[in-house]
Length: 500
Image 1 (tube, rainbow, N blue to C red):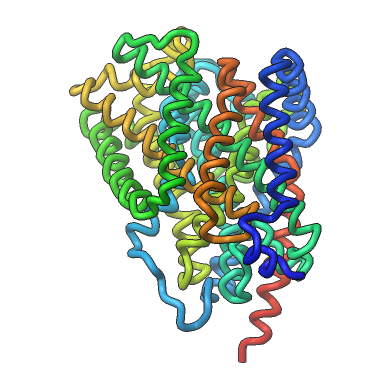
Image 2: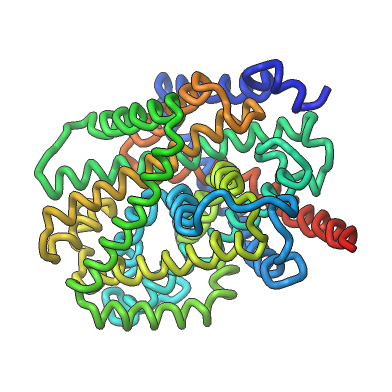
């Protein structure tokens, strides 16, 4: 019996749903009843994964960058994600706004000002040098560009092509497992497909738990730092509860048009905040720093992509590069499904340009200006005292209209996150049902599950605990991504050979 037939008779695939839901509930209960054991296990998982398998994360991301450029510039670029008569459903602006908003979420608002400032006071071992020096500032921005440049976006872009082409040309369900059709064929309908979709569920839970925790940290810090409003020891739980309630209601009611409208508004506010900081901040310094970092990024891209920090004390790459790659990989299942679902009728070349090149440039501009302002204003003291989550609000203190700017920043953090969380909850329901429009009860269940997993991790108040969720759940995806890389070129080559 095919997977398609099963999903017509049942609201969800019983194997995928019950395995995923049961293990999720067990993890939540374990975390509540035995928090010390959970913390110890998470620390062990983080260390083992990043120190033993860090090289695999690095190679996988690098190979995907190379693969994307081959797809975009080679004979496959003109191939369409769809059949010959399929046309794009959305305007170019709305299409890009939705894919950028769903993929980047509040992460760029959190790390955009924080990471360059952190590297400024603690130089990455790849560059070394004296902290807080002009060279340290330039190198800090270069590494920030690397962490938010081509490598992470290639993960999304390549999977989007794999999904979009297979689903729209072979009439496959919009499931994560369909991305592996060109690698394993009809086995996506059997046990292998179920295993892949179960792994996608856990990866998405881990990735969104990380993001939810970071958002809660930043909103709590913003309310306290900017407005002196302290919500007490339970602030993390309260903020996560409110966010979970909002996006769960959204996915339950199915406000798809609202997601599109929020995506458009986000882009206008995002650009507006960037322009405001550029104009009213240290303009020439920001332009110079961005230009310099772009040059260094292009020069050092290959060695940084493969840098494992051999012989360096500590676990720097695990806490930064490996964490980032794992975080993006854990987001990849639901983000690629979402981008593929709105990209029907687009060419492979256009899809990769919009999901790889343009977002990379957008991140560079944001980091160069917002992160550059953090370096120029030297917010490192605030970071030491209040944590990295306070960096964006510390920068706002040095600019005019601080109160209004802070409101826009909180709006960006919240709406970017809610857009992504909405997409993630819908995707989770799709993974366990095989339906592009799963039932609202199923969507609501996974919305609540996302919030619960985030709460038990973020409630510790420790950034490392929050980060580990992505690192652990993304580990199996490194192998799957390499399988997908091979399968896509294998499958597309056969499609090209069929073309008269």
